Each structure stands twice: as C-alpha cells, then as structure tokens.
Image (cartoon, rainbow, N blue to C red; front, side, top):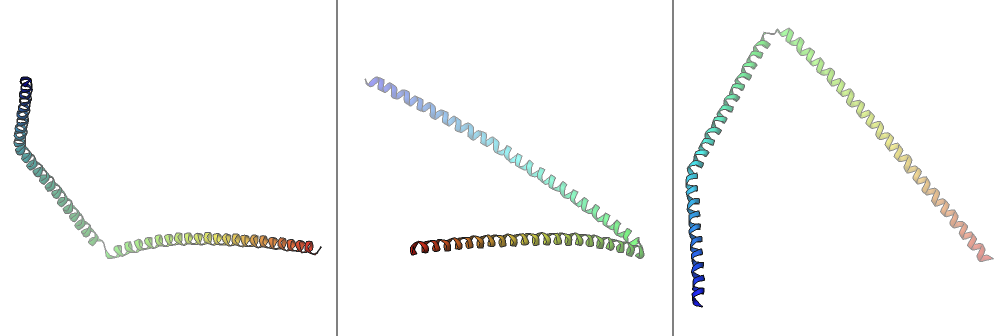
Length: 164
C-alpha cells in the first residue's frame, strides 16, 4: 500500500520540479528580453527626441521667415504710403470716412426700424392681452350676476313656499 502512495508522491514532486524549471526558464527569457529591449527603447527615445527637435527647429525657422516677410511687406507698404502726396491721402481718408459714415447711417436706420417694429409688436400684444383680460373680467362679472340673480330667485321661491 505504501509503494503506490510513494510512487504518486514522487510523480507529483517530479511534475512540480518540471513546473518550477519551466517557470525559471520563462523568467530567464523574460529578463533577457527586457535586457535586450532596454538599449533599443533608449535608442528609440533618443531618435524621437532628435526628430522632435528637428521638427521644432524647422517650424521655428519657417515662422521666423514668415515674420521677416511680413516685416519686409510692411516696410514696402510704408514706403509707398510715404510717397503718396498729402492731398491724395487726405482725399482717400475723407472718402473712406464718408463711406464708413454711410454704412453707419444705414445700420442705424436698420436698427431703428427693428426697434420700431418690436415696439409695435409688443404694443399690439399688450393691447390684445388687456382686451382678453377685460373680456374675462366681463364674463366673470356676468357669471357672478347670473348666479346672484339665480340665488335671489331661489330665496324668493323659498320665501314664497314658507309663507304659503
């Protein structure tokens, strides 16, 4: 009886030893893979930093170039404007101001029209609301009068019944 139990125990120990060995192998391979990946990840990180720096420098150079072009355009425009005679400049400014004044007058007239229409609409709504309130009040008074008359008639009828 002891022999089969002993045999099962030894089989179980053998299986456990194999599992422990497999676990050690997996751990060893995992560690080895990580150790091999570390330099590759560091290299990849450095490459990404270099690439990001190059992109930043390129964008910065493009922005500086655009600012230089804008500055040059402003200088050119300033030079052209200086060459314009004062009379021409005054005439242009006067024309520009008149144009702006006309636009302002037009927008002011539109605004005043909208306000006028809104006032009319609100006045009409208020008028209709008051009319409806007066109608409701009249209907209520009429109903109260009718009830009062009916009550008086009932009192008279009761009084006549009591006196008979």
